[in-house]
Length: 149
Image 1 (cartoon, rainbow, N blue to C red):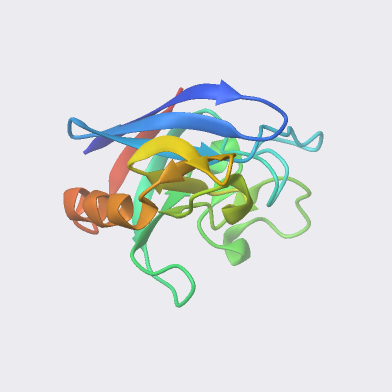
Image 2 (image 1 turned 90 degrees about the vertical axis):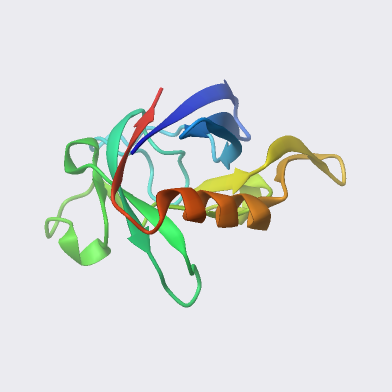
């Protein structure tokens, strides 16, 4: 299945977008784009995900159960840190789509919600847990493709 993330806004604080999956739209929240002068991928743990096409795989861990990870080595994105070339000063790993409402809830990942809104006056995605449950049902723990534009 092909997923499409269309970026709506991007400023010094956050990047927002809409994720379309099988005709269903989700709201997204990420950190701002911060390029890494050493190479592609953006600044580790601080930047939004670079534009491009990614393999999307099911991920499950104690801290991030029932989530999805992004992979594209050409764009500097690996699944796990041990997969990155030794001594390389650019690139990132463990970029996930997961439950998160505000930009402070993501560290280089993509927060998924049902819609854009505010929490205590702060821009956010709302009903994130519900959105991740719906996304997981659609993706069915399979492997997919995501294009970020």
